[in-house]
Image 1 (cartoon, one colour):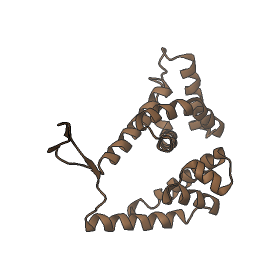
Image 2 (tube, helix red, strand yellow; image 1 turned 60 degrees about the horizontal axis):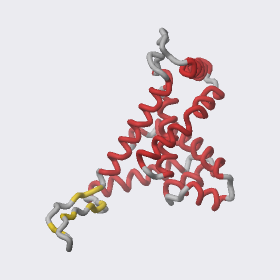
Image 3 (cartoon, rainbow, N blue to C red; image 1 turned 60 degrees about the vertical axis):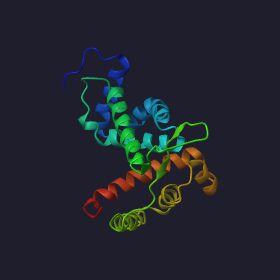
Amino acid sequence: MEVNPNLSEKALQDYKLVRQAVESTDQKAYTELMKRYKDAIYFMLLKMVNNRDDAEDLSIEAFGKAFKNLHQYTPEFAFSTWLFRIATNNCIDFIRKKRKNIVSLDKNFENEEGDEISISLTADVLDPEENFIRKQKAVLMHEIVDKLKPRYKRLVELRYFHELAYEEIAEQLNLPLGTVKAQLFRAREFLFQILKGNQKNI
């Protein structure tokens, strides 16, 4: 594959790591790629969503998507460019989905100073069909999570079913924060593998 001659030294090193990861399934190469860009991706996403937990989750998702599709990367441009595009697009999708749950009311009244006011309300009410589908998906997700090893299952339940922050999970399970994040990353990898076999049911 022809490599862009304008790539920087760092970009060429990244490409070497990508080839090691894809051709030799070298876990150290994956780890090194993540180490190089983990902080930069996280802080970029934090600026976009302004929420630390969401930025953490989106960072993990970005690397998960990038590594899953690593064989598609071509050295026409820097790996970092490709990775940041994946992270940005994933984050934009996340923001759009959040906004779908917002109902805007007409600006049809004023406050005491005469300024026009608009109100946004979260749409909590689903129609019966949507409610049924959501319940069915929730049941399926619980069944899938039940297939995880106990330590991963507990982490996923606390994070996604009880919506605890990473710090709260670490405190509740008496684990280092880094261990919680690393094990949740592994748990999500396992869940993805299980989900691939259940896509027809989702």
